Image (cartoon, rainbow over all chains, first blue to last red; front, side, top):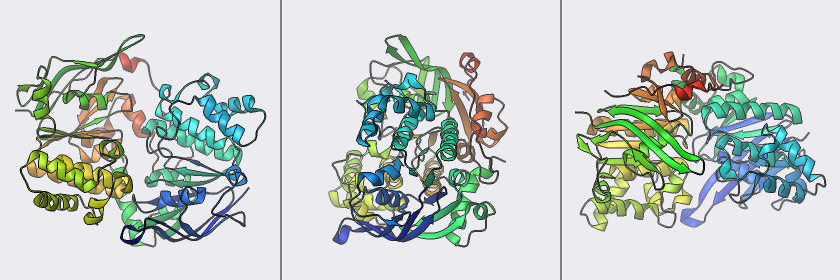
Length: 253
Length: 284
């Protein structure tokens, strides 16, 4: 089991007058087996942090450590054996002309596995799809099924840290419940560490132990989910976010 | 008079295994109100929105008893007549700003182009208006956003840009297809407030298509709940939480709640009989 530590992370895009500092001096720790949430408005830099961790943004400075080991700007295969990411939009993250089998076996091949056939079947079983889905193409799958394939692909190298970028925001509420249940099960089964980005506070509240609230590229506050449920945040901004999201939830009672 | 009356609307697509009915004989009308349409993906809610504008592409087709815009029949209108309806009388905000904005034009140029298509104006006034409109939809740094390309703005911003563009010709009906599902709660509130204000001030009718039940319950006046191409329930939005249909209840129960944590969420169990039940009328 690995833990993730981010110190003083800065991420920027563009230069001169178009320069945007997307993340400024973000620091947080995720214990092994923990589940950490990042919330904030769009453009607050929460997804950018995940993209910086996984190496999709070259322009960052600061310190990213996995179990005490420093992560360099160029990442090797060992890194991706430990850290995998699930993206927001399952419609965009799967290649339209690659079958499920192709997607999963290519990933397994790249990570140097030999018993690809059995592993593909196991992965499909793991995410609750079943083997009949193995030779389907993305357009033959529903949104929820696609997200299951994306999760299976992320699980293929047997990672220990899973970065989840709004894994259910493109899905229906009923399917969201299924995917969130699946993620909870997988986390317990494979002893995974989660870092989850979501704009939905109730989803983060359901999935995570502690939460970082972000605004304009900075982490405003890190608080435990219990504290969030008791509505006792320290910063006014977190309070504001809780208020707006509970406004919708209160109509439910 | 109602802004819009739709009676016995069907949307059909031919497939290898016969004709697939995406929408199966629904009827509803729209007054000067906020009408919500909720349901899962595949329930036909987006197809309903598109059918009103006759935006169903062949080989798909529409059948209906009538589609009337303030008494004017749209069902047999020609493409040319429809073009004068689309945008200027009925406007539509689509689900994903990534696909509805032109990726190779700056945001500013697109808004200016839209403005000048509907109104005679110089480039300079159009530019001033475009900046005003971006401010009206609470975009903080409009000058920078004007120079930006769509991939350089966030989803929330993209959607607000779309709403700004759709509001230019002052339409009578706005069809918003999941306008806020790509946005986070605080921005969602802002976008909804902007739409609400426009609906109130201009006496517009709003068709709000969404899968977010809480949002619809809070924001709309009346709600149609769709399942498998039919309307299973029609109710007042504030009474949505007392809805009687098991499908509506199932959707409500599958939501995680901040104030009531549980270890597992309830997954919706679908009853095949729901498909067979007759469509409920949403006519006024």
